Image 1 (cartoon, helix red, strand yellow):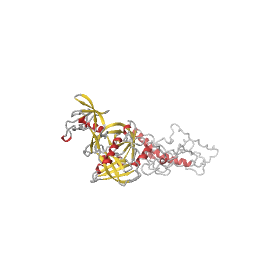
Image 2 (cartoon, helix red, strand yellow):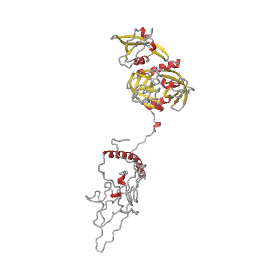
Image 3 (cartoon, helix red, strand yellow):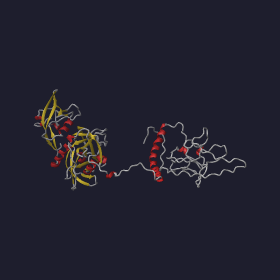
Length: 527
């Protein structure tokens, strides 16, 4: 951890906090020397005042610089065992009182002095806190907690960096000492009441409402699986899926299972740790949706409830579940940031792209989240997490970039329709207008090209576009109320509909804006 000011040496914290000991017992009373004949009896010295007189050479606890060489004067007297009250050390009459008496009480927390200033030598040397692995104390008899601590005077030229570093270390060590000292004080004083309040229930036994994130996670996690897909060549990756029905069908992304489509291996592991082999029932590369089925599926499967993605509003809460970077059963939260976001994504293998009119969320989504459920606040599935915006390579990049708060999910209404088709026939069915459009990144609209793929006609003879009078060169700018800014946007928006749906297309030709109704056709399978 760095601070604002680097370069200041920070002493390492001791391996264990020092344990304070009781204050030294009161020294035994000393018998004054017998007075000479006719002399007045010796009067006991008064207690040393808390403030030394100006100009006094007496050592002031916690203040003065150590003696030259680090040596400290030995304690004036050894503690007594009879409990007599101290009268103070004596000396020649008229000499200044010894300021090291009475000994100060032990400090509440050990002051960590600069090691160079605290190093003592010789018998009776007061020890600082050892930082070289020797533990507490230093060499010499009498070193230890009960010895008067003498703080070094501030060194000239010490910078702000050193002060900040010292405060940082002290704060960290004080956190560790607090628990040990608190235990010691409580042990020594059973009458001290604690202000700490303990919860009546532990975290595991607290009842959580179904509408909370914890409640939704507890409900959804048992029906979410981590998918391992491996090709016949041993290549593959990790993704996520969720229970679609009680028959053992799992809904996920096409790019999650693509490696296992042709003779590969596929497994699904539940949050409980139970692992099942699985097989691909059907996959739709254009939609980026796939359905797999568990082999020997258990009879107690609980499908997740499917919501209505058309009714989702910007600002609604979202909960994403998946296995980012292989970390299964990860739960993250966010909101719906936008709707109908046109997204073209690819798994980076050079195959055709997938198009979606996506739900955008800022819930953290990373590689491995693909295929997992995007839930609303009630735990209903509103989308399938599918793609992220990468700061490095943009959408569909092959690098393992992390979340930057721009995640995209296939709306569940679309995914449900696709899944039902895959379960029924094993092949996807796409809506179409029967015209080829430019895939260039523009903002002017979707332009019908002059020629179709592989030299075919740009407008399919007898298709929906031809019947509506659309021609090459027309620029489609709206589909119903949705603004169309490019070809991929148009494709993604058409694929949110089903074959046979009637839509209104707005287009430009020769500088004029026109509208026409089109009944969507159908195409079966990926091509």
